[in-house]
Length: 609
Image (cartoon, rainbow, N blue to C red):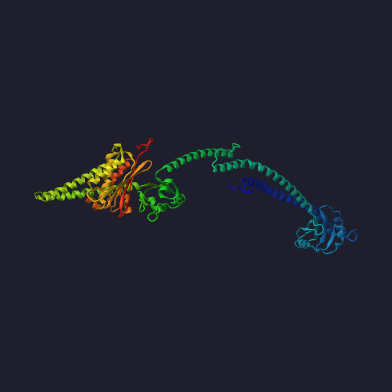
């Protein structure tokens, strides 16, 4: 999990918010206090100035209204100067008396006595004189750089007549210095308060962020699969209740994970041990899970299958889309057969969906149906062959019997021939039925082998001599038998039938003047018997089929010779019942060789057994 930045930490955010709230509150209080303090100090200062100006204005007005004679000891200017000279204050820098003509009559500032008798150039004096109203302004003294209050007041206003203007300059800088001092004290208090607030905020934030940090670390551990840690409970408040709930959730998740893991292992074990292939897809039809059986059936590797469309994996992209497969109710046959190897799978589809009907994906179960298809095909072919083999002699017999029934039996020349054909076809059907019964007993394992120890060279040679004595064509038998005595445990009746069937086929397909070779070789644990002819041979593509039931290399010739097409099939079943194997090698136009093996053991005393 990514580490949280310092300024993104909830701890820092909480402290900052806490400090900002306190700072805003203190700033609001400080601004309100400073503004009110400034207003109060200014008001008190102005009130004090107004009171003193009123006293001066009263004295000046009396002097200006007073009737003067030649006997008066002082002139108006001198009397006004005397009045202003007695007006002393630390706050007031200068007081001037200006007549209606803007002439300065007196001043309280000794260093400005030279201005008496001159015209005043101040705009505030002219404005106050013109409007007959008091005015005040605050300006900056260019020399001292202090703020100075300038205030004017009309004197002796009677109707439209103004006796003069009282001009006053007061030092208001002290008021602002007091305000600045108070602001500095307030700022210091704010700084101290903020320091305390930050410390308290950090301590308070830790009480909230410590459980959150513990839960964060626990969540990280849970993400890695560690459910053993528990969150510490620091109290019984909301955070404590959250920590308790988080620990309970951890326990529940641990139990759920254990249950899920157990079920997952069971499912994985079931999938891996299933003989059927299982494929699961996501909601878009891409393969998300496949077991080993399915990979073996599809002959693909896992990396070539995962995240690929299911229709492409199954070779159905030309016929079905994923949406079509969702709607499929019946199984679909997948034909992966080659020319030399049939291979057919059957796929069953099942949709996984939520209770709302939303499709989560598709489950495909694959079953190898090759053997079943081969069995079905062989069954159909077997029924067809049996029907054909029985229908041919029956049709012949019916034709001859109908002819005999129509009067041919009266003809002494034709009747015996017809009866002989009927008898021959009857014997042929009996042989066919007997061979089918033998194969049926072998398929059901409903037979017993009456085994006995036989010296196989002698046994094999006796059967060869029987055929050599009774053969009707010019065929030479060549023996390549072992000079050693080979004792094997066999059922002589069934092994006689095996050799009869193989030698009979060799004689049937051998031309006049040809050779039939008989041989025996041995190895450590089996003997190999060989019977070879110089017949017409079998095409290479059909060599493996000669042991199939009703297969004939030349149907017309074998049927004419009375064959049923079951001889080599019976021979294969009997050899396999003895624990051996049988196969053929052939070259078209040059002949065929049949090989079969029989197991035997060499005893410790050196005798064959």
